[in-house]
Length: 249
Ligand code: SF4
Ligand code: FES
Image (cartoon, rainbow, N blue to C red):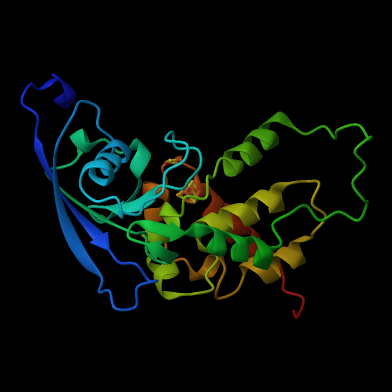
C-alpha cells in the first residue's frame, strides 16, 4: 500500500531557516512549525499552509509548481531539492528546510539564483557567436537529429541551482563555472552554428574555474531534478580540453 493511502495522518514538524537580511537586528535561526499531513502533500502545499495559517511573513518561492520554472530549489533535510515536486510522504516527520547555499539570500527560503546565472552566462558568453548577422528571413539551418537531441538535453536545464548547491567546489570557489555553467558551455561548444573554435573554448574551460576544478564527486549528477546527463557533459569537456593545445603552446 502507498504511504499516501495510510489512514492515520502524520503530524509533521517543520524546522525552517528564518532570516531577513533587510532587518539588521535579526539573527538567523531555525523556527518550528507543526501541521497535519494531507494526502499528496508537496512542500509547496505545506509551506503555503504554514504561511496562511501560522506566519504570513514566511518567505519562499514557487511559480510553476511543476518543475519547470526552477524557482523553488531549497535544502530539504540537507539535500538540494525542488520544493514543488517533493512530497512530504517521502520524508520523515521532522523536515528541515534551509535556503540553497552559494546564492544571494533574499529572506528565509528565498534566494536569488538570477544573479549567479546571469554572471555565469556573461562570463562564458553563453550565446551563439556567428560572423554573419542573423537573418530572420533566411531558411532555418538543418541539424542532425542526434545532435539536436543532445542540445535539447542540455537546454532542459531549468536553472534551479540545485547542482550548484550540491557541489562542494562551487561552495568554496567563487568563480567556478559550476555544473550548470559547464553544461551551458558544452551546449554551445557542440552547436555547429557557434563559430568559436577549440582554442577559444580552451581558454574558457581549461583553467582553475573550468572543468579541471571539478573533483569528480558528481553530486550534481545525482541531485539534478531534471536528470541532465552531467556525467557525459564533464567527460565531453575533459576530452576537449585534453585534446586541444593552448594558444601559448
Ligand atoms: Fe537544476 Fe539540473 Fe540545471 Fe543544475 S543542471 S541548474 S540541477 S536543472
Ligand atoms: Fe517551478 Fe518548482 S515551482 S520548479
